[in-house]
Amino acid sequence: MRASGSTIFAPASGAGRAAVTLVRLSGPEAGPLLDSLCRDRPPPRRAVLRSLRGAQGDLLDRAIVLWLPAPGSYTGEDSAELHLHGGPAVLSDVSEALVALGARPAEPGEFSRRAFLNGRMDLIEAEAVADLDEAETSAQRRQALRQLDGELGALYRAWAARLVRLLAQQEALIDFPDEDLPPGVEAAMLAEMAGLGGEIRRHLDDGRRGERLREGLVFAVTGPPNVGKSTLVNALAARDVAIVSGEAGTTRDVLEVRVVFGGVPVTLLDTAGLRDVADEVEAEGVRRARKRAAEADLVLEVIDVPLSTDRQGGRVLRVGNKADLRSFGGSVDVEVSALTGTGLDLLRARLADWAQRLTQAAGPPPLTRARHRAALGEALKCLEAARQAVLPELRGEDLRLALRCVGRVTGAVGVEDVLDSVFRQFCIGK
Image (cartoon, rainbow, N blue to C red; front, side, top):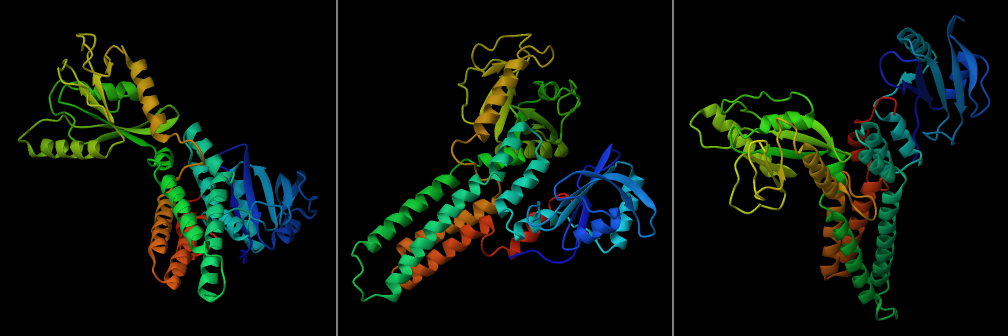
């Protein structure tokens, strides 16, 4: 399956003023377009200074030009790069010249889509490119690079190869029922199905670590009114996010702020004080606070008086605030004073530890998208159905469906219905 069609172009550098603007071209007419622009196409893969001229010979810019003939380019097609001066007028005039010569502006993700269609990367690697573009932290960058290196795709292709062998063996049992096939063939097939199903099940049972890291965690700050939740959120965010007041019920909606703990992006939620109230608006705030806390990856339960109850454990971190006024005597996990800053470094360290524990995974790169999880979950169901099938024809069909599900993840089979949804999230120049 190869990409075809028009020659496309797009700026691949950031928007706004810059010293240099990079424009990518890709498609069957990239070479002739380059000839028209600079009159003297550079040697392949050599950066050369050229004067770029429009159709009437007017000078557009003096730019660094690279010619990247197929298949040794990002897209696998004839491609070129123009390193222009960064002024918006330069980009506008060069773009107009390219359109006049027959090129068209690229759609979001079209470069990466062509790279996938031309076999330069599988669908998982293409999604990793998008994740690299969106990475906020080093941990997200490392995860995307592991996926881009092809490690995850290699695992799935190995599973697909095993399914192909199982399917071939099952077809042999269907086509040659009267032949003297080894008596242990069916038993070995069932054992192989069980082993492969176990591997897929363990891969799925990862606590959503990859998805959590890619999307970011959610930590909810909860507790009674006036225990200093908003002050604590402001201190952890290092800026004034929430209004701080001695009046109970000041925070009525859930406030969100993006922070980083241990290299992991975290959305910190400042919630309404938990109490029984008659006021309709505040009651709605309490309801929302309880709901978001139930959905959060970690709950910071803030108190300002020592408790005799045991610490809750689980995904709850009990924080004793106002430690400048009193000691909590071991009834909390961390003692802090959001007002003076006492204990905040220790709390940040504990939150970083939680963030890393919730997102780090040993072994192959973890799942990073709901699309992968859904397809592999369906493949597991088909494998289980194949093991339970009574008729050999039904077992063969279930194995075929399992193979198709695994292939959807890498883009090997049945991908036309998912390509648009995958690539429309990309940057234009990707």
